[in-house]
Image (cartoon, rainbow, N blue to C red; front, side, top):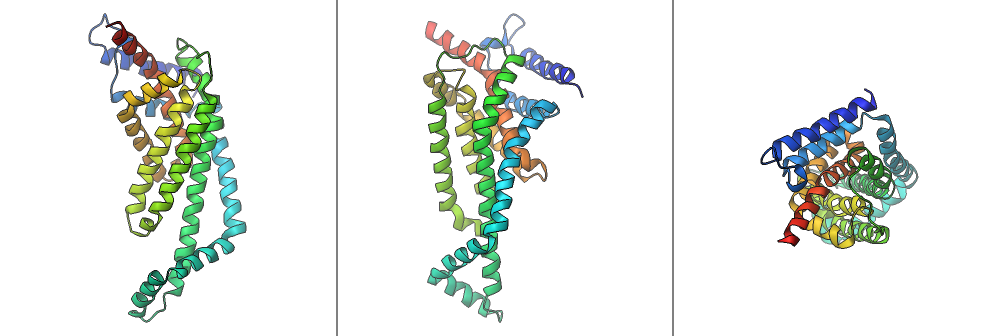
Length: 287
């Protein structure tokens, strides 16, 4: 499928949004908000853009790098870290005694299960590390590479901001990532409860992506004050976008590219809505 044809399809989607959400034929979308449906169109555009070789190859870079780090940890640190986790679990006397008592009812000391649990927790932590590294690399490398390309191709009317917010973006990413890791540690005991890890990881991943990606996309397009105002006004839709794309993590094979698809979805959503946001602010200020 050629790049020109993909551009045509993406532009057609934008035209459909324009026709659907304008109150009448005389009004342009620049002064209207296409609403929650724009979230779905952003995801659709992100998935469609992956058929473009240039974008797809860029998307692979963060994942392959973080996958290499993850495999390196699993191969070279499996024994040391599983032993450390097992010793940490055994050091919690009431926890270890409870497990010993439960397994004694079945004629076992539970040692095999404890070793399995230690290995599972280490593997889970490696997966979390792979995801976090992928998100960070996507934030630092992929988003700055894709935003200029997609802006010039689909929204050349959006001007660049005179001052870059790179430092603020890095601080925002570090702050959000540290808080994400702290929440992961606090919630880690709940990961042993069946079904709970799915819900917790979905919410925490959504928190991380909706905190990092909007700032990264807007760092060269808006002022710090405008970025905060955009995030505040679109908070609910950004959360919906983050949770919706976060579900991709649970789809086999697709989950490898989930952070990059998230980033693409945020890029399309923000580029499509930044003009509407500015038009409304300008109108409100005049009033």
